Length: 558
Image 1 (spheres, rainbow, N blue to C red):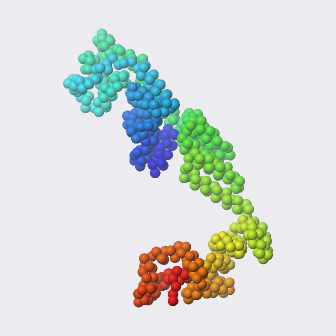
Image 2: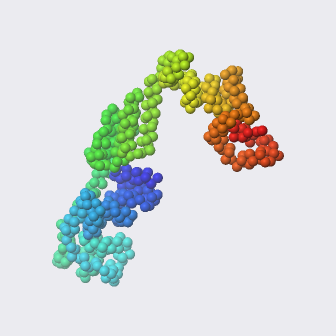
Image 3: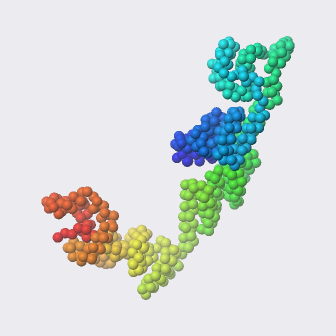
């Protein structure tokens, strides 16, 4: 269940639906709370939504669960970087590189964090926000006291305390400006008409941060790029949805147009290529580009497997003859090497079954089947049983619904001593035609030769229900009765008794009877308590089980 939720999260993340990805990863975490990969994935999803606090929390949990996993430090560094914690980001990336010195993502993250750390000038007002004195001053001043009741203001001030360089992010908030004035003992006022001199004086006091704000607009370029990327993905997803709608209407040209537009907008999501490939295949075109592009982008192997599965499904829709299923089966097998998905495995089994059925249909020819069966009959009369089997087998391939071919091959197997094969063919014969008396006589004969006299008796009696006067079945019943009575009378030779007992002990039904506590008590009473034994014999179910034991030579009545 956790793997299924994780797979859904990965798919949502790959398609740019980060909110759904967070939900799926959360579901997976609830099912598997010690899986570090799940926390890592959710951290990435939070970061993609610019929820860096949540991303940081998940990254810390990842590192806690798996401290020797380099990717966890990559997540930790990215979260710190998003929060502008430059020193912590550098530290996280450096730790990750100690574990995996060749990791390109960590190298890139460290270079980015280091360059931003060097580029960020020390904030001249940083000391004003240090220590508990800040809160005391803000509480004491009537103009800022009310701000402390506002959670978003408190969060901003806490963030500035942790990272003074983040002050530039909040200077547009008049509450922060007012608080800065209180902390610096400078009175900031809103500029009014006719008060230019005072305004200029005020600007001189706070000029440095304001000018700095204009020189280095926030958000920083990296954040802007993330926003642009998100907008691009959203636009591409809209094109994909329009393509899906057109595909459902069988408007393939329009669907291709929308999927192509989605690919042009965002070429990093192979699901767009996969969807277009499905339409192309409906129109007789190829879709290998989806797989190739996925490999170029090093996409999640599950997405590549999905592309291959989609290709196999589309090829299967076009399959008309058995040979058409060969590329279908090959494509599904390739998909399973990428990711062993139960759905793909099911589709592979269905394709193999469809191929086999079509092969049988293409090979189906009852006339040739009858000719082969007649050839088998001739070899049977000549006692050339292996040749007879070969022709009967060909007859079955040509007409697998003919019970006579199975019946005749069962007779051959019996002559060759291949009892299990003979039994299987006899049962298939009965399955195809439950009224065909030859099937019962073949099955009964095999069971008789295997010394399963009770089972043979049941088979012959079942056949007599359909053909009461069949002499072959009547003779089979007679032979079984003789053998069963021979055991009942105790007329078996020591060798016969030993052989029958050994065979009986291998029978699951006999094993169940002997391990049944009730039957063990019955057998004990038969030896030690005749009165109780008489009562047991009045029970038909117990009597039937005792008869089974007698027939198998396990119990002898004297």
